[in-house]
Image (cartoon, rainbow, N blue to C red):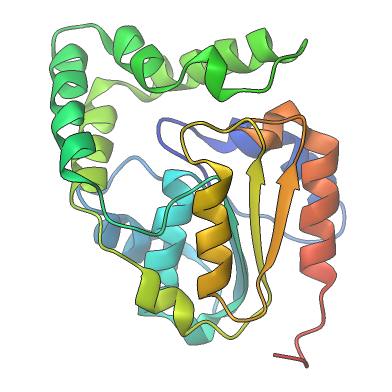
Amino acid sequence: MLLPGMMSDARVFLPQIVALSQDRPVQVGNMTQGETVEEIAQQALDAAPPKFALAGHGMGGIVAMEVIRRARDRITRLALLDTNAQSETPALAAAREALIVKARTGRLKDAVYDRVKPTDLAPGPRNAGVLKLLLEMALQIGPEAYIRQCRAMQRRPDQQKTLRLLRCPALVLCGAHDNLTPIRRHEFIATLIPYARLEVIADAGHFPTLEQPEETTRLLRAWLSQPLAQY
């Protein structure tokens, strides 16, 4: 199961879906309906098979950690991409209020670009296309879902204890140019999870699934191939 990030849908994982679905079933969770991280996580669990591998990007990673907290025995392996295990800081929670106002007043595009900037991606030819796709997804998902996601992020739980209890193959992945969730945050996440493998993609930012799809897919395939016995 793949969980997209904030204001993203399956298209954020499209290269991985195309590649991985050749030899395994791939399911994408809906991140747009719940009012809280807990609600969204329960919806994902309700739609998932009894046992499954779980990967989440951004907010999807935050929801994935809540899925683990609720049903650790159902998750065979976990991948966290460009995400955060800690609760929202007061400063960022307050900053989201201005973004919510923009979304409510017909300025969703401005709210999206206030949060994700070109400097959050790696420089290169794919940069403009990734930003265009991010805006297309956001505008199609719409302001109501954006406001729900902002509220869920503001109230999200800290998951450090959840990660310390994890005993399955775990991949922690980020882009070297990610300024939204920087490398140091992923280094911290990797220290929390026993046996976690940290991977940093040099020529990617906050969206390695789109910026460096081949390398991201390669790392996810290696994660999916890791033996369970050592855990």
